[in-house]
Amino acid sequence: MLAGKSMFDLVFESRVPMQTLHRWKHQALIDAGLAEGIDSTESGALRAAHKRIKSLKKELQLVKDASEIYDSLAVVDPIGGRCVPVELAPPGLQELLGPLLSNA
Image 1 (cartoon, one colour):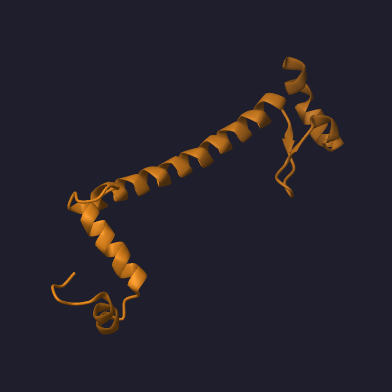
Image 2 (cartoon, rainbow, N blue to C red):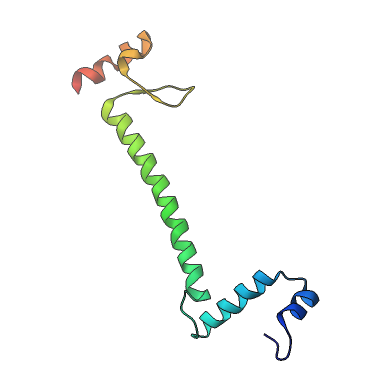
């Protein structure tokens, strides 16, 4: 905070909402080691880690879905994108998959 300036003067002059100024002040206290919390340098790394975790969860779900398709030798419905049991596949496709099913 500027010495001698009230919070209301800063809000009026800067047109920055009071809540934002309070948040900035609190973060400055954390960065200076005067308050508990995650400092600015760590928060960026934490955000990146959360983003990476989210990406890995999506990738894991894709692998699980692919594994389910492979393990069940199911046919994927091209319109809905869902697994369809081989028995419900069109007859021509059942004939193509016949040798694969007999080897399984």
